Length: 334
Image (cartoon, rainbow, N blue to C red; front, side, top):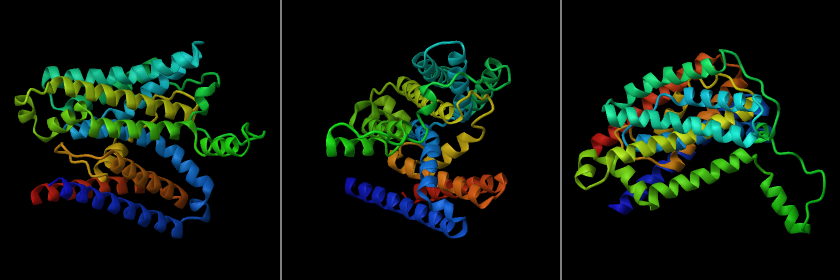
């Protein structure tokens, strides 16, 4: 059985890679030559980091059988909090931790409402979607906040070119070039992806997450603290959404309470495309990242083609419907 599951997972990941290659090839042939340039690929990597970090948290939530519609609002709130703290004269580190903590607080709020009020996650997060967005507008007085430039603005920016020889000769030069291959934000994404993936596969907490999503009643009878697991998952997701908000602030270099509208659709679509089941109990970090990369490629391709935003929105909606339909067929077959 385990071998069959591993084979199915490998087959799914191979299908995602092929799907991305088809999407990329389509835009490479139809879009201007700049689409497949190194500079554009770097830009896509930086833009995709925002969605990708958020998918890490959403993957954990969907594996438990839940969902979170407040992602975009949390990202906007975090960008505003970071900008407001920076403008108030606090150090970049305090602004960073304050913003990420705001994301974690939103996650705890969602988790408490879901576990204590016994309200389905869809309704709870639909409400907090509006509450958190309103809080972001209140803090920013419905305006953008332009703080002084600091190193937080460089987290997702293009790596600076080397102006002086790196210490350590050839080895030092190689390490320097490798480290500066991507911005800090992309390296942070890779580290987080490995950490969350190992957490899901190798830890007791990760096994509890899968068990709750597979069969909540059976997990409860086995002694798993279901409510605590859900609360911790929403806390973890909130912190990851907070880091996504940090990347958004770094990219825009300001706090905008209206930013990231519709981000939740891209994140959910990426996770579902990656093979996660909305019924819970199934999901893959690598699959979600590939799904996020497909969504980023579609967004960049539509932009390069000069298509209106409604085209991208229709494509995203169609992808969500097709992915959920495939998931339903897979569940019936099983």
